[in-house]
Each structure stands twice: as structure tokens, then as C-alpha cells.
Length: 252
Length: 219
Image 1 (cartoon, rainbow over the protein chains, first blue to last red):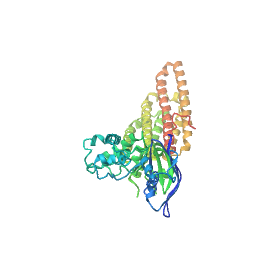
Image 2 (spheres, one colour):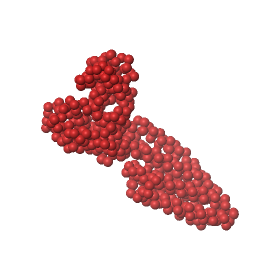
Image 3 (cartoon, rainbow over the protein chains, first blue to last red):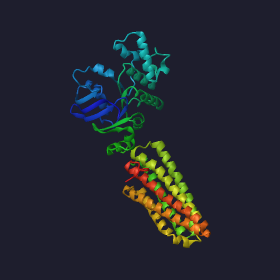
């Protein structure tokens, strides 16, 4: 196994009285794609959101245990959450570009971080758009509104926006579920390229997508981590019957 | 409600079991035709082959359709992959039966040689291994896999022993050269039938246990 990027120890999360994640222990390898699968309500999105403390925004959420990124517990009191979210970027199901130009969408993060020099920003925008495999499609209309792009392009723009602040980890919550097959395949190809530089954790309902894009797969059910392993093993010969039943569609 | 996928998988399983039953019958008739020097029976074997070929194509097409439309994974994937291979191995056993059946008429005037070499003892063993193989295709009882491997080994050794005795006879008596050559060829095909049974046992083991045991010193 590769070096470990994120180590999760005894992670438990409640929403009010409801137990959403129960004692999760998991080690996410560096510069690999880890897919989280499981039926709706199993806790996979909640789990994803614990990795950059997005659940902090939910008042009823109570969390215990540890999430160590590069050996540093992100739930330590002295952790700067804004900084954390720079290192751990996130891409959502529905593309959510700002109502600004394509250029400004990507330059937004770096600007907030105090980068104002035009030349530097130009370079960041170009590199990020190139890494997100959308540069060739938008390079001649960087000043146009991002809202004029197609759904698939908007999603890749959002990925470029995530990359612009130079994260180590990218969390993706159903990044292609609202896209047509061609755009989906572009996103999947992109994920494949990005894993050379970034650690990617992706939530997907599409089992075939999990199989195609990920190196490791974690199966969640009722807030528990049921099985974690190499994707090729999970999809050919899973160890646990619940996993087998879920991926073959015989659940419940 | 039964899922369409399960209906397709059940259909595949039923066809595979039917194929194995047809092959078991074909092999059994072939071996009987050989030891009893029954030429009409051997002709029946040749005539039956087209039914097997048709079913072979049907199973291939069904597997192709399931792969394309259902994207099977885990045990379903292992079953369909193995069904393709088992079907292929069974069909080859059918071809071997035809090969032997077509040569029955060339050896049928030499029943005394066939009796003397106790080829019937060998064919009984082949009958059994094929029967056991068909049984595990249907039941997936992998506990019998090792036994099938052992049976295949015994058949291989015995058929080679008889072949070498045939070659000795050829050297002593030139008038048996023709029949002996045909018998040696037939014995070679009988040995291959046992080898296909072993392959099928390996495939069944893969379906159930998810472990590849071919090319290994298994068990």
C-alpha cells in the first residue's frame, strides 16, 4: 500500500441523538483515488465532510475521534479551518460556479489568499484550467460568464477553482451524477490524471464509476464502515457478504 | 419480484447445466460405442453434435448480452466469466466425442484387442469423471474438486500406459499398425477429456471461492 495521507481513528458522529457514523477507522492512501460507496443515508457523504470539517457548519453535529492529515489532527483546537479547507478542497454534485467570469472564478481563491499580481494570477488560472482539462475549451473566452458554460464544463471549472489554491486532498461528492455520459467520462479521465498529484476521495452512487475511477473502495452501511480494500478486490471477490450483496444489487 | 438480471443468470445456469447433460450423454455413448464396437451408436454421436454446437452459441450470446447490459461484478462476474470457459470446455469435449466416434469403425473389427487392453476399465473411469464434473457444475460442490483432479491424473497415467503397450504391439506385429495407430489417437483424446474435466473443476472452484487454482499445485 502507498503512504497514508489521511488516518481516521475511532471517528463517531451524531446529528442530535442520531448516530450517523459509528467508530470509523480507515487509512486513506496518498495520491490515490478512494471511493466511498453505500446506500443513501449510510453516512458516506457525512464521512466525506468530516475530512475538511464541513460538518462544523451543522449545529447539531457532534464528533469524536481523530482525523489525521499528514499526522496532524484536523480536529485539534488550534487548527485554522479556513487553512484546512484550502488544503482539502471540495467538489460538489451540482456545479456551483460564481456568477463571475471564468477567469475570476479561478482567480477568486488566490485573490482571497492575497495574490494580486496579474502575472501570477494569469499563471495560476492557466495552470488550474489546464489541470482541470478545460483550458482548450475556454482559453479564448476567459472573460465570459462562467454561467454560460455547459454543465460538464462548469463542473470542470469548479475543479479548476479547487485546484487554484493548491490543495493536497480533493473531496468529491457525486461530481458527475448530474452530467451526461461524455462529460462524465471527461471528469473520470480528469480524476485519473489528478491522482498523480492529489489524494482524491470520491462519493458516488454509480457503482461502475467507483470501479472505473478508484484504486480503493470503502463500503459504508448504516453509519458503519463495512469493508475497505483495493477496488479490484472489492469488485471481484469482496470478503464480506454485505458488500457482495450491495455491489451485486441484491441488498435488503 | 425477481430482477431481470437474476432471470438472465438463472437462464445461463440452466443452459450450462443442460449443456453438461448433453455432453455427459455424448461422452457416455461414445465410450460405449468404442468398447462395444457399436458403429451405429457412434454414428448417432456424430449426428447429435449439431445440437451441442447450437447450444454453445446460445450460451456465448447470453454471456455477451449479460456483460454488455448488466455490468456484472463479484460472484456474478466470476460466474459469467467461468460460464464462458466451462461452455467452451464442454463443447470441446463434444468435439472429442465426435473425433472418437468417427474412428470407431476403424477399430470395430478388433474387439479382441480392445478387450485385451482393458480399455473398458479406462472408459468407465472417464464416464465417472465426466459425470462428477457435470454434477459440480450443477451443485457447485467444490469439495469434489480435488477428487476430480485425482481422477484426471489416474486417467492420464492409464491411457499413456495403454498407449505404450499399443506401440509395443505395433513393433511386434505389423498387421496391427493401422488399428493401433487409431487406438493411440483415441486414447489421446480420452486423456484430453479428463483434462477438460479438470479445467471445468478449476472454473467451478473459481466461481465459488474466487481463487484461481489452475497452474498451481492445488490442495
